[in-house]
Structures are given as structure tokens and as C-alpha cells.
Length: 179
Image (cartoon, rainbow, N blue to C red; front, top):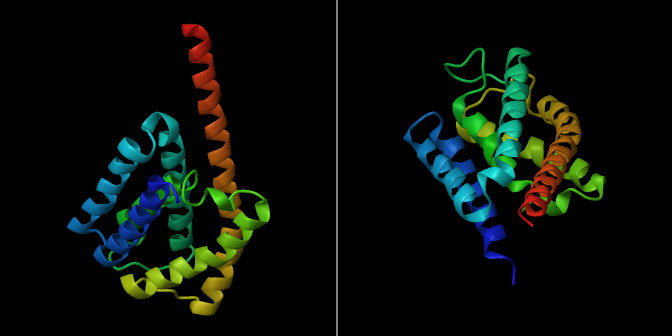
């Protein structure tokens, strides 16, 4: 039977994705915030994954803000930075890399393929539901996003691996000091 925490991680991400996309920058953002808190208190910990979640959130916010500036997206009322709901989605994606999406890290082609397919599909579905404009059209946007996500998702898994090893090394060093 699958680990309950893996299932909870996947469900929290999906529930939060729906809340962010349908709710936008409204009180619905309480759901992803609660999901992040549950992740750090029940599924993992801030010490183990805080750096990863923040790094993924910042990288994603920068990427989506850049794409917004380049005219790939248009958001109602947002003309310079990615909206908060989209930034929260990036943080939530960071919570999945060591858990429900860990299977996609190795071999690297899995991350590349999942990124190239899943990334654009998520954006296209989110754009349709959230009223996000795609000035380049759906096909051109999907092709561009596929290329970006084919690189981005393996890179994010690289961050996850690096930070996991750093945390493991810190734990070993503490145990040696305590011994």
C-alpha cells in the first residue's frame, strides 16, 4: 500500500492547484497556505525542505514574470510580476519533488519528458480556467512551454537532489558531534 504521506502530498498539491487557478488572488489562497503548513508539519519539515520550496518558488516566479514581460502570458490586472496565486503554485510544486514526483527524477529523461508534457498541459488548463491570456496562441505557447519545462523540471530535480544531500550531510555532522 502506498505511503499515506505520498498520497497526501499529491492530494494537497492538486487541491491547491484548483484553489489557486479558480480562486486567483482571493481568500481561496488560504487553501495552498494550509497545504504548505501541512507539508512542513506532517509530510516533511522546514529544515529538510524549506530551502528547496523557497528556491523553486523564486525560480518559478522569476521565470513566469519573465514570460509575462515577454508577452507569453497576460493576467488581468497584472502587468509586471507573476500573480501571487501562480507564485504559490511554484512553492507547492517544490513540495512534490521529494515526494509524489520523486519517481520522475531518475533517469533524467523522465523529468525531461514529464516537464515537456506536464508543464504545458498544466499551463494550458490553468490559462483556460483562470482566464489567463496566451497572446502567442495555444499551440505556440505549448511548444515554447514544452521546451522551457523540458529544461526546468530536470533543473528543479537537481535542486532537490542537492538540497537533500546537504541536509543529509548536516544531519550526519550533528550526529557525529552528539556522539
